[in-house]
Image (cartoon, rainbow, N blue to C red; front, side, top):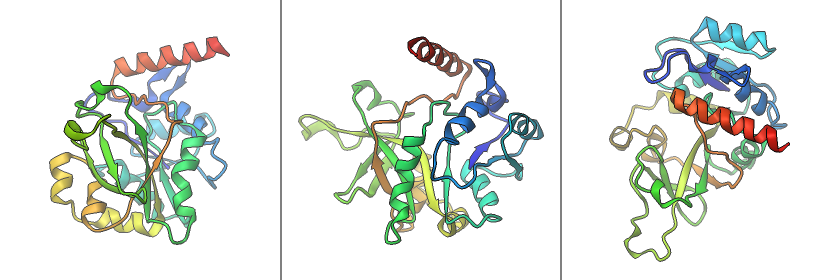
Length: 241
């Protein structure tokens, strides 16, 4: 499911912003549709304009409440009326999402003994990203499950030579029943401090698999400037073909 809302403080109407001749949401939808593990693909939206645009390019969109505070809640509303065993939350502002990373995030949940929730992580190679609070970091145990997520540089670099850190990639897969339960859990203290919803699951004692990936192209469109960067990336990619 791709949550998409029209209102945004930094970029109103973002899902409908044109990128190389297509609305942003169409780029995400078409790339996500390449994942062969998906039984169906749905845009969950609070906007009739977004639904019309999605249906216009042949996609499926369902209307949700305008009162949701997060994309997860929007996805959970749609999941409540669906019988899929696994639900993937594909961010609607990542035009370079690809089938490989979507299959990677799903894999841990195909094991009946696996965790109720999974996400992705990517090695941080640019030291400047360590102190950027917009780049969420994750540390894991030996089993690959997340121990903690933070906007601060974790682990602390003082005694790590060389220092190694992982960026959290915000694509999630859930067992459906866990997603519905998660959406009903009360927000937790660390979640509020860090502003990171996934900490709610950890604080309530649930496992989150954090799957390493090298296949994620990291550009989320949060502002008009990001949209221009995405346009340049797409133009350059086409020029290399």
